[in-house]
Image (cartoon, rainbow, N blue to C red; front, side):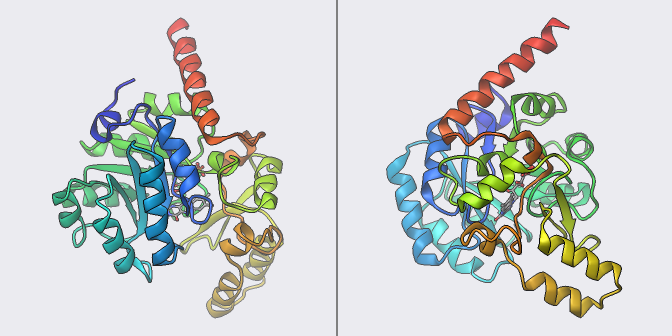
Length: 314
Ligand SMILES: Cc1cc2nc3c(=O)[nH]c(=O)nc-3n(C[C@H](O)[C@H](O)[C@H](O)COP(=O)(O)O)c2cc1C
């Protein structure tokens, strides 16, 4: 199976395991996915520099296949994390939150492919003009930080594919091979799955978090802080309290304080899925089994083949 992304990155399948803070902030998930022929991506954002350096060494020891590193460029520790990634001569950068112009040149000169996460047509065009190698395009179904515009993956990916020449990795709302086939049909060159990979043996989140993903249906997530920089998470006591405060006319300061009183870490590491931010996408409703990541990649590819056959037979 060849696409512009498999060719660019040297991977077997056009399937990415999305960067997810905590869930993919260590080596095992990344190693399992890359060894299985997909693109494993470590989420460096919440990591301490020493832990990040050690995890990169573990990944290099665990696979000779390409892997990716996600660093939110405007994060507090970004400069240090970027230096560590640069020293490690990582094969693929998946940069988010912030422009690529300052950091990208040294990475590309060292042979790193630079992918940039965008969630609007405007940012896709800007990233293309800045010279990135490919785009990751996130639609509204996505867990984590979907586009504030709330434009869905189905529509945004199609629009971006027509607006730019770069290869596109489509992201948001996909949990199986049929979804991968759908987005490849739209013109994407690869497809990224986040929420689906939370329900893997290797994802480093608390069991409560995995169980919450399994239990949720397709309407089980919500956007918190709509109209600002929203997060998509599973509905729980925290999201209900935030919504009630909005409805009651709380001030911006009050809402901000409420937002900051809860965290993804609280849900992911401590297992507090009641008051923590249980970030996950609408596709949680399509997930009903925890699998080893390598088996999941295999299954996704056989489902993709089935979908292709079905389309060809129509
Ligand atoms: C728990 C969680 C944590 C995430 N953390 C990050 C992150 O650190 N950096 C990032 O660029 N995107 C992050 N995302 C977004 C994912 O990379 C990806 O875009 C999203 O999960 C795709 O949508 P899906 O969940 O419907 O598959 C996160 C998503 C989730 C669910």
